[in-house]
Length: 67
Image (cartoon, rainbow, N blue to C red):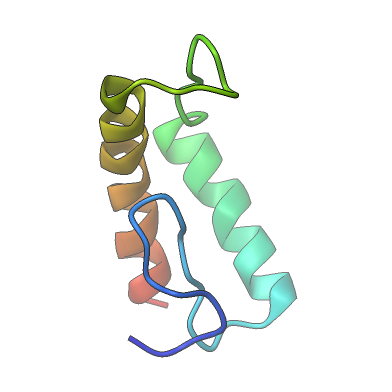
């Protein structure tokens, strides 16, 4: 995968998207898929919190990969 962000389960790399297009896609994803889950303690997330967040970012990544 190419782009400015390294592929990582908790990061949605935008590949070659401009910042404007990436922001618009992010807004569309948030409206369609809702906000991402928040850990009970964001400074010390549990493995379950991390898994839940990784699963929630997967649909976002599919949208970003297709544009």
